Length: 166
View 1 (cartoon, rainbow, N blue to C red):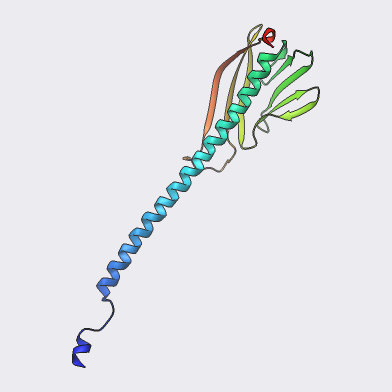
View 2 (tube, rainbow, N blue to C red):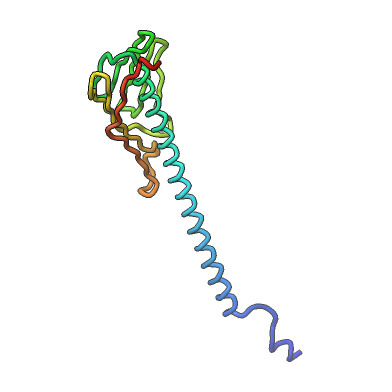
Protein backbone atom coordinates (compact mmCIF):
# COMPACT_ATOMS: atom_id res chain seq x y z
CA UNK A 1 0.00 0.00 0.00
CA UNK A 2 2.87 2.40 0.75
CA UNK A 3 4.16 1.90 -2.79
CA UNK A 4 0.80 3.01 -4.25
CA UNK A 5 0.79 6.28 -2.32
CA UNK A 6 4.27 7.26 -3.53
CA UNK A 7 3.18 7.48 -7.22
CA UNK A 8 -0.48 8.50 -7.31
CA UNK A 9 -2.16 8.25 -10.76
CA UNK A 10 -2.96 11.47 -12.74
CA UNK A 11 -1.15 14.59 -13.85
CA UNK A 12 1.09 16.83 -11.88
CA UNK A 13 0.43 20.56 -11.72
CA UNK A 14 3.42 21.20 -13.99
CA UNK A 15 2.06 18.83 -16.64
CA UNK A 16 -1.34 20.55 -16.48
CA UNK A 17 0.21 24.01 -16.84
CA UNK A 18 2.26 22.89 -19.85
CA UNK A 19 -0.83 21.34 -21.44
CA UNK A 20 -2.91 24.49 -20.85
CA UNK A 21 -0.12 26.67 -22.30
CA UNK A 22 0.06 24.55 -25.45
CA UNK A 23 -3.74 24.61 -25.87
CA UNK A 24 -3.83 28.40 -25.33
CA UNK A 25 -1.13 29.01 -27.95
CA UNK A 26 -2.84 26.68 -30.44
CA UNK A 27 -6.22 28.35 -29.87
CA UNK A 28 -4.74 31.82 -30.33
CA UNK A 29 -3.02 30.82 -33.57
CA UNK A 30 -6.18 29.17 -34.92
CA UNK A 31 -8.38 32.15 -33.99
CA UNK A 32 -5.96 34.62 -35.55
CA UNK A 33 -5.75 32.54 -38.73
CA UNK A 34 -9.55 32.28 -38.95
CA UNK A 35 -9.97 36.04 -38.48
CA UNK A 36 -7.42 36.76 -41.22
CA UNK A 37 -9.19 34.40 -43.60
CA UNK A 38 -12.56 36.05 -42.92
CA UNK A 39 -11.10 39.55 -43.47
CA UNK A 40 -9.42 38.45 -46.70
CA UNK A 41 -12.63 36.88 -47.95
CA UNK A 42 -14.56 40.06 -47.13
CA UNK A 43 -12.00 42.18 -49.01
CA UNK A 44 -12.06 39.80 -51.98
CA UNK A 45 -15.85 40.00 -52.10
CA UNK A 46 -15.73 43.82 -52.06
CA UNK A 47 -13.16 43.84 -54.89
CA UNK A 48 -15.28 41.44 -56.91
CA UNK A 49 -18.51 43.39 -56.41
CA UNK A 50 -16.95 46.75 -57.31
CA UNK A 51 -15.07 45.33 -60.31
CA UNK A 52 -18.14 43.62 -61.73
CA UNK A 53 -20.24 46.71 -61.18
CA UNK A 54 -17.74 48.95 -62.91
CA UNK A 55 -17.51 46.59 -65.88
CA UNK A 56 -21.30 46.57 -66.16
CA UNK A 57 -21.60 50.36 -66.13
CA UNK A 58 -18.60 50.96 -68.39
CA UNK A 59 -19.74 48.48 -71.00
CA UNK A 60 -23.31 49.79 -71.01
CA UNK A 61 -22.31 53.45 -71.30
CA UNK A 62 -19.67 52.82 -73.99
CA UNK A 63 -22.04 50.60 -75.97
CA UNK A 64 -24.81 53.21 -75.89
CA UNK A 65 -22.44 55.99 -76.95
CA UNK A 66 -20.83 53.93 -79.71
CA UNK A 67 -24.15 52.90 -81.22
CA UNK A 68 -25.79 56.34 -80.94
CA UNK A 69 -26.57 58.34 -84.01
CA UNK A 70 -25.78 61.65 -82.34
CA UNK A 71 -25.39 63.42 -79.01
CA UNK A 72 -28.45 65.46 -78.15
CA UNK A 73 -27.36 67.13 -74.91
CA UNK A 74 -24.59 66.57 -72.42
CA UNK A 75 -24.09 67.85 -68.90
CA UNK A 76 -21.68 66.90 -66.14
CA UNK A 77 -23.99 64.21 -64.71
CA UNK A 78 -26.10 63.10 -67.71
CA UNK A 79 -25.96 62.49 -71.41
CA UNK A 80 -28.81 62.35 -73.89
CA UNK A 81 -28.26 60.43 -77.09
CA UNK A 82 -30.28 59.78 -80.24
CA UNK A 83 -30.05 56.13 -81.23
CA UNK A 84 -30.28 54.68 -84.74
CA UNK A 85 -34.08 54.39 -84.51
CA UNK A 86 -34.30 58.14 -83.67
CA UNK A 87 -35.31 57.44 -80.07
CA UNK A 88 -33.87 59.45 -77.22
CA UNK A 89 -31.73 57.59 -74.69
CA UNK A 90 -30.66 59.24 -71.44
CA UNK A 91 -27.97 58.04 -69.06
CA UNK A 92 -27.93 60.00 -65.81
CA UNK A 93 -26.20 59.90 -62.45
CA UNK A 94 -28.08 60.50 -59.20
CA UNK A 95 -25.39 61.54 -56.72
CA UNK A 96 -27.78 61.53 -53.75
CA UNK A 97 -28.49 57.81 -54.14
CA UNK A 98 -25.26 56.78 -55.90
CA UNK A 99 -27.01 55.16 -58.87
CA UNK A 100 -26.82 55.42 -62.64
CA UNK A 101 -30.08 55.17 -64.58
CA UNK A 102 -30.85 54.47 -68.20
CA UNK A 103 -34.00 55.90 -69.77
CA UNK A 104 -35.36 55.17 -73.24
CA UNK A 105 -38.80 55.05 -74.88
CA UNK A 106 -39.76 51.91 -72.93
CA UNK A 107 -38.98 53.41 -69.51
CA UNK A 108 -36.26 53.84 -66.96
CA UNK A 109 -34.00 51.25 -65.36
CA UNK A 110 -30.91 51.22 -63.18
CA UNK A 111 -27.63 50.14 -64.72
CA UNK A 112 -25.63 50.48 -61.53
CA UNK A 113 -25.27 47.37 -59.38
CA UNK A 114 -26.98 46.97 -56.04
CA UNK A 115 -23.73 45.79 -54.44
CA UNK A 116 -21.64 48.87 -55.22
CA UNK A 117 -22.19 52.61 -54.94
CA UNK A 118 -21.33 55.03 -57.73
CA UNK A 119 -19.64 58.03 -56.14
CA UNK A 120 -18.70 59.89 -59.31
CA UNK A 121 -19.84 59.96 -62.94
CA UNK A 122 -19.03 62.98 -65.03
CA UNK A 123 -19.53 63.40 -68.77
CA UNK A 124 -17.67 65.78 -71.04
CA UNK A 125 -17.90 66.37 -74.78
CA UNK A 126 -14.39 66.24 -76.20
CA UNK A 127 -15.24 66.60 -79.91
CA UNK A 128 -18.58 66.64 -81.74
CA UNK A 129 -18.48 62.82 -81.92
CA UNK A 130 -16.39 61.96 -78.85
CA UNK A 131 -17.53 61.80 -75.24
CA UNK A 132 -15.22 61.58 -72.27
CA UNK A 133 -16.31 60.44 -68.86
CA UNK A 134 -14.93 59.47 -65.49
CA UNK A 135 -16.45 56.90 -63.15
CA UNK A 136 -15.78 55.95 -59.53
CA UNK A 137 -17.37 53.07 -57.65
CA UNK A 138 -16.99 52.09 -54.02
CA UNK A 139 -18.33 49.18 -52.08
CA UNK A 140 -21.78 49.62 -50.60
CA UNK A 141 -20.84 48.40 -47.11
CA UNK A 142 -20.33 51.74 -45.39
CA UNK A 143 -19.12 50.37 -42.04
CA UNK A 144 -16.30 48.29 -43.56
CA UNK A 145 -12.92 48.40 -41.89
CA UNK A 146 -10.02 50.20 -43.53
CA UNK A 147 -8.52 46.91 -44.75
CA UNK A 148 -11.84 45.89 -46.32
CA UNK A 149 -12.63 49.16 -48.13
CA UNK A 150 -12.30 49.19 -51.89
CA UNK A 151 -12.84 51.82 -54.53
CA UNK A 152 -12.22 51.76 -58.27
CA UNK A 153 -11.82 54.83 -60.49
CA UNK A 154 -11.75 55.24 -64.24
CA UNK A 155 -10.60 58.66 -65.39
CA UNK A 156 -10.57 60.10 -68.89
CA UNK A 157 -12.45 57.31 -70.66
CA UNK A 158 -13.10 58.47 -74.23
CA UNK A 159 -15.73 56.95 -76.52
CA UNK A 160 -16.43 57.92 -80.12
CA UNK A 161 -19.79 57.58 -81.84
CA UNK A 162 -19.70 55.00 -84.64
CA UNK A 163 -23.27 54.90 -86.00
CA UNK A 164 -22.13 53.95 -89.51
CA UNK A 165 -20.95 50.59 -88.21
CA UNK A 166 -24.33 49.64 -86.73
